[in-house]
Amino acid sequence: QRGRDGFADTVYGADQKGAIWKFDLTGTDSPTVPLFTTNTSVDTDKQTYRQPIMGGLTATAGPAGGVMLLFGTGSFTYEEDGVDKSVQGLYGVNDTSGKVVADKGTLTSANLRPITVEAGTDGRTITMGKAPAQNAGWTVILPAGERFVANPTVSSGVVFMPTYVPKPGESAGCTVDGSNWLFGLNTNSGTAA
Image (cartoon, rainbow, N blue to C red; front, side):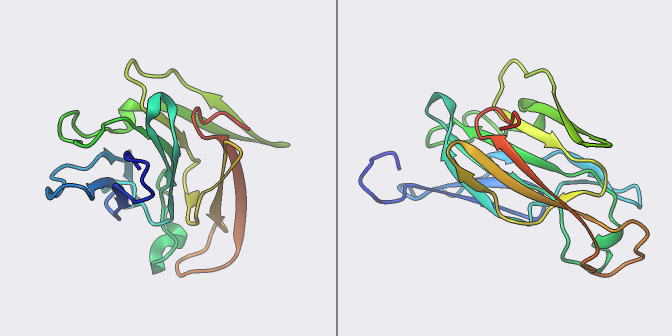
């Protein structure tokens, strides 16, 4: 809320084609380009597509006076989602674009610090990658087949993001078998909290 008058000035929305859109409620123009687009992923049929945003989106204060957008990608809604082994991710995108997105162009995953997840016998290890020159946030690259299908929750600078991995070997359809993980990450940096 730029004016700090208690009224919303900006609304963010996500779509199933991996785009985050920014709407300025104080103006009359509609966005022509998205604020951000997700990584591309390859499905089991070797088709390339942007990661779908099917879960919730949360906004909080970000670095440099920005708005940190927190969300994840993946789907467990459709019949074949149980066998989908595509790579999905968790995202923290810092919007410092002001009122007009088109001036700066669309942000992509190339503008984010990559974070990888490795499974071990006692849990998981998160490895921070190198931040790009014009860093606009972070992305956690999930293991193949794991996806975010819930809502992020922020508490005291930590975002909690649950993920789901369907049970291996399931042929199709939605089943409750599988495993869940809960990530607790620093909202600004993506580091383990």
